Every structure is written in structure tokens, then in C-alpha cells.
Image (cartoon, rainbow, N blue to C red; front, side, top):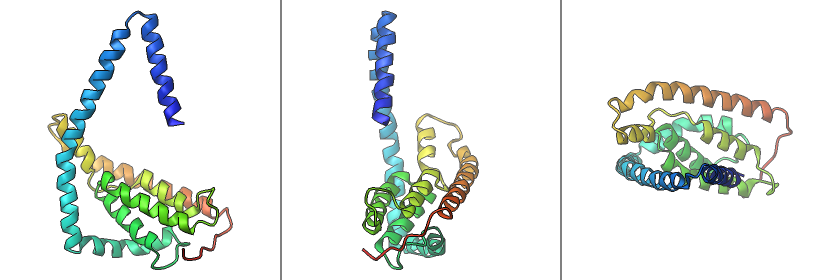
Length: 199
């Protein structure tokens, strides 16, 4: 669906530019957009490498495992259907820890692994299970303490105060996460529970 939406916008842009006799504007905008994309990516690399390195140090120092233990009661509450000690729980806790630290790119591989493990438990492979929906909602809303990626983008565009976004991001993600959890609970109470077997 997203591909069709982008294709629609591109075609409309070409048609409008052709009607106005300014097709060269489309070419200039495409090259300028590509240039900006590459510039932003290079600006993000140094910040992401730094934080991924910090993440690795935190992992070796046992900080992530302690954080995962702190999150375990919350994970049990949010994902009651997952059997204890299932691999999906470890991936979910790592995914949540990375998202809280604002490392969305580092959290993505763990989120994908968690989804794969949840799909193994899913009795109906054609439809997402409640646990998969919960994980998707949490990833989309994701409480963030340090918006690392946003700070990096603001630094890349020469913001004088790139960390000013921290307070508003914390408030916004707290509200979005609380809303996601409440909506998730509301839907869960309106459908019969699924009893999973360890896959």
C-alpha cells in the first residue's frame, strides 16, 4: 500500500510539472533529495556507531541483563500468553531496552527476531496473534528516555540546542505508550484467550 501511495505522489508530481512546463524542477528535487538523504545518513553513522558501542559495553557489563530483569514483570503483564523462558521474551526485552535508549535502528533486528519467535507460537499463521499486535503497538509508540537518533539529526542540521527535544520526546512517548497499552488491553478483553504451546 505504501508503495502505491509513493508511486501516486511521484506520478502526480511528474504530471503537474509537465503541465506547467517545468519538468526540470522534478529532476532537481530528486537529486537534491538524494543528496540530503546521503548527508543525513553519514551524519547518523557516527552517532549510531557510538551508541551501538555503548550498547555493547553495557551488554558486556551486564547492564542490559539487569535492565531486562527490571522489565521482566512488565513483559509478563503485556505478553501473558508467551510461555515462560521462551526465546521471544528475551528478544522482546532487548527490543524494549534499545527503544527506551532511543536506539531504534539497533532495536529493529531484535524486534524482527521477536516477531519470528511469536509467529512460531501463533496457531493461526495467516493472522497476527495478540502478542504480535502488542509488540507492534509498543514498537510504534515506544517510550524513549534518550532520543538518540533525533539528537543526531538535529546535530547534523547544526541545531544550537540538539538535546532540547529530550523533555518533549519523553512526555510524547509516555503518552503514546500509555495509550497503546490501554487500547491493547481493551481489545484483548474483547476476544477469547489463546493458549499457546511452546514452539
